[in-house]
Length: 117
Image 1: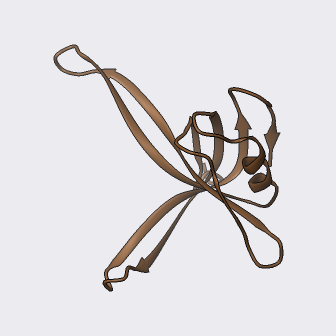
Image 2 (image 1 turned 180 degrees about the horizontal axis):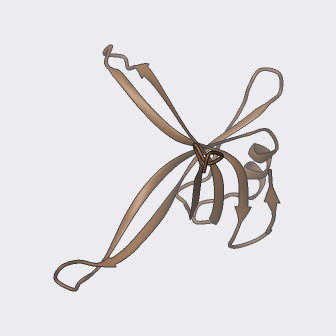
C-alpha cells in the first residue's frame, strides 16, 4: 500500500460544461464539477439518494478533450489526486479549496468514447 498515497477515483455526471482557460505558454486548463450519487435505505426503510459535488481540474491534452467532448450531464470516470490550496477573500478571510487534479479521464455516456492520460 506504499504506492497508494493520494489517489481519487470517481464516476459521476457533469453539472455544467467545463470552463476552459489558456495559461501563459499556450497550455490549457479546464475546470468543472461532477456529481456522484449514493443510494441507501435509512433507518425507517426509506430509499435515500445523497449527492456529493466534486471540483475537478484538467491540464494540457485532457483540457483539450474536455473542451471538445464534455457537456452538462455527461457521465465520466476520472482518476487523479486531491490538491488543496488556501487564499484570502476580499474581506481578508482565509478560505480553503480542494479539488481533484485529474490524471485520467474516461468518457462513459453519449457521443465519443475514449481514454486520455
